Length: 284
Image (cartoon, rainbow, N blue to C red; front, side):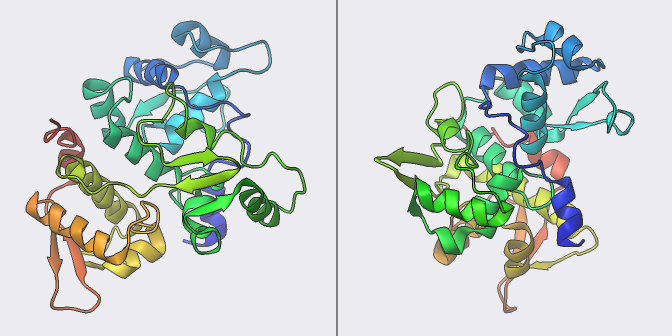
């Protein structure tokens, strides 16, 4: 798939209209998706309680956040239509059942990973956490991030970051994973922690990447999974950390790793549907 066609599927720069993804509104949207109903933005607002004025409001942003986080997709009939029919993904279904208010760290991390997805995430997240990792590093001044985005979009305005940093500092949003934090103008990025109880979530995410980016491959080099889908770059894992994650996923029985080849080859052991159902299995 070409980079231009991938870009067309990512959420555009200002999809959020400066609104953060508040978790109680995400829960309301997941409930709406589970109900099987269809509605325009005003109807969705009245059914979910998500604020919506006569011409603008939070409904479109929350709908798009849910899409970018991989929690919902839109039915084919509602693509490009004013009437939306959101449908739960396997990830969205288990979140609604087990962690409806998205409080668990693994829920927030996977939502974050999906926002960075080069195929279906949000473009500013993709440019910050995947495409721009080498130029930005793990900590940078706010001005550096603005300059990075300004160069990409060819825009000189200084509000291109939007709510991306603030959402990870807000208790009502995604502070439990705290991917980004800002102190005295310096933005610091945190790597995804390697913990046993998070392993099944990381595994389900990896299996979904294999399915989406390499649908015809039985085995995929680990380097290709990162180059194409950001498997190691997006979580911020070093090579040694990534090896620890692969060891963990093998222990959980989710993947096999062929270490006799260079680079190592990964293949799925379980299906994605089952993997998503089990992501909270090891929660303490």
